[in-house]
Amino acid sequence: MWSFLVFLCNYQFYNHTNNGDYMKNQSLWVNNINANIEKTLNKDIEVDVLIIGGGLTGISTAFYLKNSNLNIALIEQDRVGFGVSSRTTGKLTYLQELIYHKLETNFNFETSKKYLESQKYAINLILDNINKYQIDCNLTKNDSYTFTNEETEIVNFKKEEAFFKKAGVKFSTAKNLPIKLACKYVIKVEDTYVFHPLKYILELKKICLDNNIKIYENTKATKLDKVNDEYICYTDKYKIIAKKVVVSTHYPFFVVPGFIPLKTHVEKAYVTASLVDQTKDFNAITNTYPIKSIRYYNDKSNYIIFAGKSHKLCNHLNREEQYKSLEKEVKVSLSKNIEFIWSNQDIMSNDNLPLIGVLHKSEPNLLVGIAYNTWGMTNATLAGKILSDIILNKHNEYINLFNPNRAISLDKVKNLVLNSCYNLKAFALTKLKRNYSWYDSSVKFEIRNGKKVGIYTDKSGIEHIVHNLCPHLKCSLIFNERDKTWDCPCHGSRFDIDGNVIEGPSVYNIKIDK
Image (tube, rainbow, N blue to C red):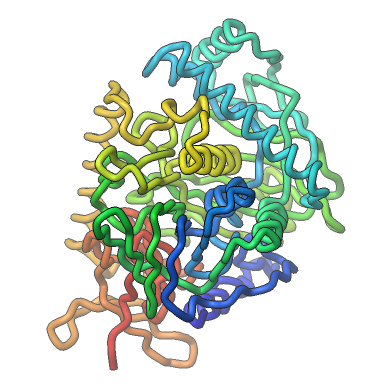
């Protein structure tokens, strides 16, 4: 609990820009949200199903198990819904850049069409829940656009169109967007949506609690052992014995089984929410990196939400430069009135399909949902349904599609090599050089008492000293000046200024014991 509060204090400060503007360094979705905090685990327990992680995947899994008569517990290291799920753009769309012709090339037409159907299915699951339980989450029907301002990319749009025609998808094309933004070609579909992701998650949480699902917040899993046919999950103070375990953390906190670092990489993007005079009922995204993503939101005030400057986690280690570049782009092209600014990290699979299901064939009762390739709202919902169906031995036509142990493909091999090189690059760069030129005098790295440490000196002159190693796989850390966090550029672990872990895969702090 304390580490979470410390993180909020550092993460939600107002940033004073050179223009005299003030921006909150936090997601728009957490602003003015009041939610009950559930108790921390205070004793050893035994359950049928343990769900580790309270984002949209975890809470959706619990939701779809609510009528099963199973003894279910969900643990979340901070608060349900306030992690990565609260830092998305909140889109519910099956038009996902130009993914379908890529999947068709890497796999085949049937696989690509199956993925398309899964995304529509996930949207309908959310719509059914909203309608059935009368969930107020600012659901708005939208047109979705994928666009480019590069003439050379139009050939790829034509490939996507050919897939849509073959798959029977209704779409249209154009040469501009509904707003004045540089654009040369567009694909558009109509039956998609946007919503407030955190409001939706918190309503699912209430429904789960009403159905006797135990939810423990500020309860961090640190270790998972298998003993005979059961699992023992160790938390900070207590243990949970479970017959089945669902790992729905943003990134699994263990390497074996599954070897997730070899199947995925992490990307980072930066997001703004800016005041505008009026909203428009469309969302849009580019097909090439760095991604530009747009949607609108209305709730008392009108906002345009813009995500951009996306990059592989190991690149652009100067995070402040990325923030400033995004601010400039937004103020020039969209709105001068930026109210919120934040960042998000996405787990990307090597073959563009999420990893959902039994983590490894040797562990049939250990399940995972991960690597949603920036489309977390649909795929996390889908994961919740698939994982619950696996637990209940129900048929689900998408189980094989997202099987984490699926066959090797060309993209899988190619990206395994490329992403391994990127991670080695990040590992090497942070070992060879730590005191980068962009850091001001408040940040330095040195050896103290034989230990490699990072030091941040706050405005009161107090030094905050941490071990400069990520406990996950021993990458050295960088300092994120905007968010005031120590970040791992290899797999995305993040720590507050005093070394308390705030985002995995690491489950261990990097505090220096005094």
